[in-house]
Length: 88
Image 1 (cartoon, helix red, strand yellow):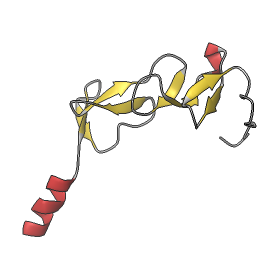
Image 2 (tube, one colour; image 1 turned 120 degrees about the vertical axis):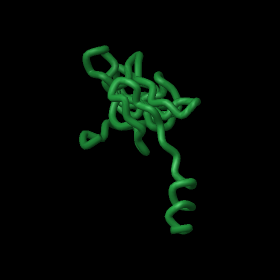
Image 3 (cartoon, rainbow, N blue to C red; image 1 turned 135 degrees about the horizontal axis):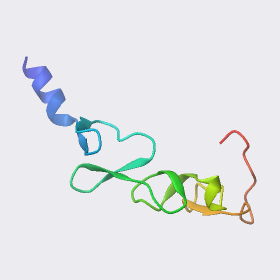
């Protein structure tokens, strides 16, 4: 029983207010914000990390479909020194 209590203490849960749930992972379209809440991605992002505008996946409808994993920004074309990875 003590081992289970320690495992539960080591986990972090985030409130996803639109679903009224506490989750270990906020899921697509959200990021783990301060205060242990899931906040939605915004700007050019479909998926984001750390903040609403640091994109891991970009929204093609916004005109900048290419995410640069080094800068977490979206671009209309791939920046110099990068190439289009069609799988990601």
